[in-house]
Image (cartoon, rainbow, N blue to C red; front, side, top):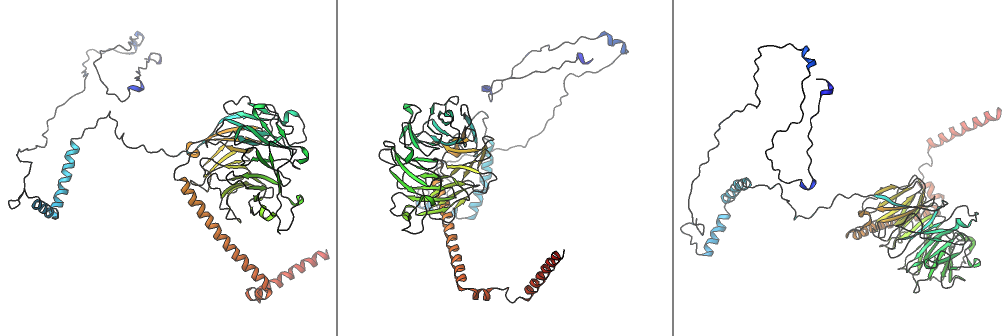
Length: 572
């Protein structure tokens, strides 16, 4: 038979998924001719017929029968009255006290304990012999379900691209009360370009990534655009020329009110935030010129209050704009209405009090946070005494009680960190964006040495991030004007009932440790100051190198070699 005559006989058995697990019922089925291959007469000449031929053919397998004798079980039948019996003759079984005393006596006997243990094995064996397992029954359905293994993840669910040009995103803001609107401020580094279309910013509906819902049309490019926490339709923004204004979505993209240029900031406005007021119309702004100004949207002709961020050393010393520190980040907590915090371009975080009377009372605290500008500054949504700062290559967690150093920090990254924020629901989770396009999630309860999840959202740098109020969505803006909407897994966006207590213990422990180290460093500095004030007498007494002959000989030899080399150079 050649290859063309070979036939592969197969039979595929299929069954529906809903019929899996049912009992299989077999039935008789008659023979079926699958294939019939006729003989090829051309192959006859290759064979010689043998006659006669005796061949024995057995179609079925050989069967044999074997008899064995099993272990014989002998049974006896006895009768007994199970109501009450087995008591000794001297015990009256109708007397409860007598039977109870006899039971206690027998139970204390060692033979009774061994007898019960011996009978227990045989009883268990007999019970297991009578067990029958139903293979189609669902067992252990009454037991509570075991939670699955925790799997943390972060993936992109939508992308929003700026129509036309690709300008960097300077700020992001979600609509309050869990809204689905996202405001994005775009501004180019080349501020000399005065094209009208390059000044627009956009408001997106996260359900529609094709076209922005509203185009905000400021007179100058916006560096910050924030929603009003009390009104879902109004926004305030700070512009590149130092002006601030506000918009109403119901009236279109043109500004409703702008401050005059002569009362605006001297430099660009990087941050604007609403404050806690009765009217809900007051906000304040900051700028690299070192000035913080408070505004009222009902009257934008002039600011309601101002403050210069100048750290003075004496109570009577006056603050000046020439010495003011440039502001790069602004933080405000509505539950603390008179206090706010600013991050400066020199790496300082300064706590401010609006109601202070003297310059020292207005700027009571300072923290040396980073080596460069502070890019992000935010208080923890649950623990207001602790705040997050992002700058240079690290993200740090600070406590208001420890001013010399942070209580927690990340390792130094290979790329620059650009922004950071706390998750509003899972308050132990820090979200940090990096220059290489990665979004890293740090959970203080799970692991502090490395991030839980690092997601590569894009190849260009990520500049801004803003988590949603629900905790599962995070909006990240890139340097090419693209917004990446990332979704966190359920364990990263929801808090457990014990998380608050556990995080309290961690922060208290680290805060206590830092205060102990600060006290120790103060003691060392005081001791060094005392040693320095005592003069060279203590140095001669405590310096082990004084009157050391070996050191004097080595110094003399070194000086001689240097002099020889200098003389050779002069001769040449």
